[in-house]
Length: 116
Length: 112
Image (tube, rainbow over the protein chains, first blue to last red):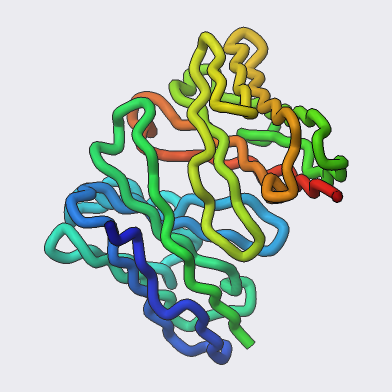
């Protein structure tokens, strides 16, 4: 079956511009997660959705970052007024009931964002 | 202390060798543990979960020591296709039980 998909796969933007990153989770997965992976760093948790609600936004680095999810499916991560330090790979993952102990998160291929 | 710590490597081993990776975690209340594999410029994929009693999947053996907050992964008879970065992952408990915390990964290169 189809996995998690993300678009665009690559995005190059100029400092100060806004960008939108999209994630299509696996059908039927109620939980959706956004992570960021900077060069040489581990994956950094950004935000988690259960359905259309985001009970935990604590990982968002600043108020320039926002995310929404509609219809319990597609999610969009928006970065306003991009800065060079926002350059990273943004990964989306989805899963069934998130609190089950050994519930696997399936990752999309990521969006590689470069801010010039 | 970082939440999940791993030796970054790289580990360069010949084909057929046995290699072991270690990981420590700081949150003693963590409930679930995993090893993910990440190929270069690809997304992470689950390699195996790590259970309290230890578990094996073919050439891969994972062990957990809750008292020492230590997780290990052993790869026997290394193949060229095992070359990747191995991520130690810990899942929270209670209110944070959905969240995965990743180590920075250990890079493995298997050499012909």
